[in-house]
Length: 384
Image (tube, rainbow, N blue to C red; front, side, top):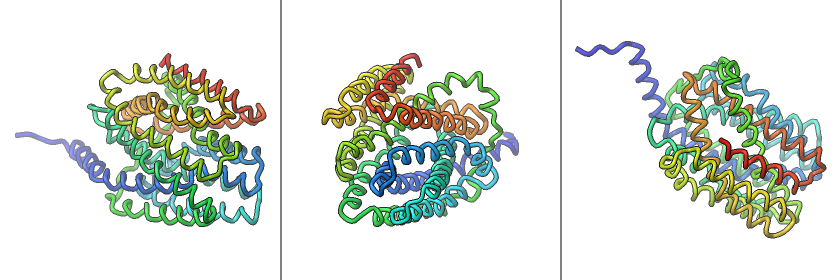
């Protein structure tokens, strides 16, 4: 007669809860993705339009991502105590408060409020990524890892296709206030699937284990900083550059939507390619191609060619992003609690973003030079 240990039953029950909650979680990701894609890169542009200086906007970004990184351990402890489902729900009112504060800033510009807003927003974004990435690492099986990660990657990208176009059109024709109200409504709706998740879906443990093994993870630390640097350059700084070159918000929305579309279309092919050839081979190919593209973007930063190259980069960047994310999820899954590594990852990525914003201010916004620096950083992935 077969005997099942009570711990085994607990493990099976826990796994069942995770699988059962997958659809509701992914629906939340999809709806939330639409709301965030309407917002994302528009907040820095909005702040510039209502009179904040470029330096003030970059200080806002420094504070946002600095708090994102510094608060990661505390947020992980809160998620451990309260639970993923509950924290994902709690963050929505905070997100809506951020939007209300942004609207308030239009007629009441205040640097202290802007910087407090940056800190709160950093925490809100942090809770989402820690929760979702910790859960996905648990979902990831032993087979077809690249293909599974491509679906997760594509899920975030698909909402980003229509979102920026809609956001740009609404902001241009009706105004940013109405846009922020629409986003608040979408984010409120995104909470609904979470109420159908199983109670106590997960309370991932966090004990600073990845930091205690920092020597073993130092190589990852360096590459994560590079990835954070490049990610912020393309998703945050690039739209600002285009805005400063006198494109309106609708045109910027179309461009960013096209970048997301090319990333989305490339994701599934790259996922299968990663499983077939191996993660490192695909990453190294992407490193060389992305380095060339980034170098050209630096050279053509003030011309129309820059926009075309941004689209090309949208397709090429998946060659690094997707297999690298697969590697990171596999690494997180090796920990008894993936949250241990996810916190380490997000703190390292945030440091890369902070370095970028600080360096831009130090270099007096020499955007061409930043792209050349990032080109070298991208090429480093050829050593991955």
